[in-house]
Length: 418
Image (cartoon, rainbow, N blue to C red; front, side, top):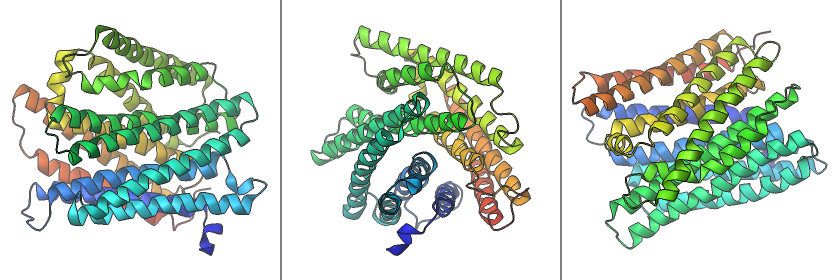
């Protein structure tokens, strides 16, 4: 395994974009099955493969590489050869479990092999969390670095915590429980601490590190960190407001933390705008466009989160599958995935040329079109209105996303713009 000492972050991250394409192709296959008879394809098996590989093969893989190489810079440590091998081994182990889940879920759904790979993936996440936690303690020397490390430590805690939802669901399946509320609570527990914990905190930590390397320091950065840290656990209960027996004090805490997140986020955005942090020479036009999309989407997400405090609205929305899927795609695709793409360009991990620009714009258009159609489906269901050809429109959105990602990958073989 000598290649573990020679493989570069750029190669790992190119693999990440390729994995993103696989996620898109799986999504395309599921959308095609809705409009074309495909009796050989098991929809639920592909759904499990799609979601697990999106989490582990795309987002987690990319974040692991960016944390280890982009921030902690294991290649520059005093024992660089040993640390480089360890870091690459963790990345490879996660990638092996991700591809194991991809193949096994497609072939058998939840079965012996898929559960084995999923369990191994969780243990890899534990080893990664311990390794990065120790590296953060060695790396942080200034207040700014300590702030970034606290973002990452929060991400790692929630990364580990999310696995409890998986174990809880496994236990319910083992005892053959038919309590759908407990099953949903377990699934939402995992999703919440992946989306709003591991993914979100890691991305915000990466962004603050990028700002600091360019001499941009935000006074509200620490307030944003501790507000989001304090809100992450209480806001989980937004996902289970359909439980009628929630104590008043807990519901009150959820209200306070949800509103606090919204207020602090907009205060932080105003400071970021006043600092003109995203203007040249700090970023290109493409990067500014991507970050604008992410910022607007995250603001919408927090507003929707606050609106879901109304129990009747929450129960109504969670009763329509397209709305739930639309919300999950808003976070994973529009916020997390587009931010990661932006960050790869911000740090020159991906080349930027004409083909790549067209590919990125195409991908973003497909993602936004996909989100629009999902939300239309949800609203139509709530209003009891039928909209024709939405399944066909989702197929078109998936094709656009895949074509955009193919363009980005092809563009990596061309020379970057000067």
